[in-house]
Amino acid sequence: MKNFELNKVVLIGCGNVGMSYAFSIVNGTSNVHELVLIDINKNKAEGEALDLMHAASCSKRKIVVRAGQYSDCADADIICIAAGRNQEKGETRMDLIEKNLSVFRSIIKEVNKTKFAGIYLIATNPLDIMTYATLSFSGFKKERVIGSGTTLDTARLRHIVGEEMHVNYKNVHAYVIGEHGDSEMIPWEHATIGLTPINRYISKAKKQKILKDVRNSAYEIIEKKGNTAYGIGMCLKNITDAIFEDSNSIFTVSCYDEKLGVCIGQPAIISREGVREIFKIPLSAEEKKEFDYSVKTVKDVIKKLKF
Picture 1 (cartoon, one colour):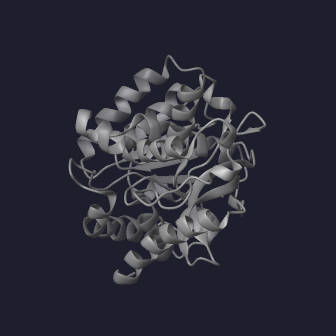
Picture 2 (picture 1 turned 90 degrees about the horizontal axis):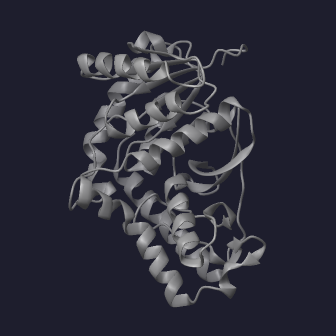
């Protein structure tokens, strides 16, 4: 990675998720100085870049946004991949595997030609599979391949609990871990409101309903508007900020766990170099059983695929 402060992000995939991420960068206070858009539809990338540059004139920070090509990846600090087929009504994230694996093979083959040496940030579903695929196709060190993981699920959890308890979601300290999908789980034993365990306030039945609501959030949004975008866009932006600010912040990203042999959502410390450390949560016997099942769900899919 470059040692000077002009931070460059290349976004590959200018669909709903990609452009929500791009707009979050332009509209926020991200320490990004150059944002390059790449899409199979070059006209779309050019149009989106022009539109974003007009928005950037109203932003608090100076940023250059332009359409580009794979050669732009050579000196990028972060490549965010949001390309691939979207989840549609009636589909699970796992239904997207084969088509999106083919897309990723093509993308990373082109990026590899540029000698890119930054950090991959993955947003495409099925998230944990695509993060593992990126690690495999790129040959990168595990610290430099990060999937958005369960960051959005965690945000949804905190929002739902905050609404339930009538407290600011920022004071809800709880995580969703495991697969970014139907087997994800919540380690309630370590969840708190302020410093007080959530277990004091929320019954087992209510916790089960909250988990169901978190898992089904994407399906509900897709049913109503066709896609999810804004939430994940903000999560990707926050991870990007953590990298460029070297903030050592904790996010439930999908990253490779050598002991588990899989990329899976767990709390991890994010720094300028990527994943500094996975922050392990001590799980109860019941929670460990749930988490192990989630890990197995992802591993079973990986075993059937060719990388």
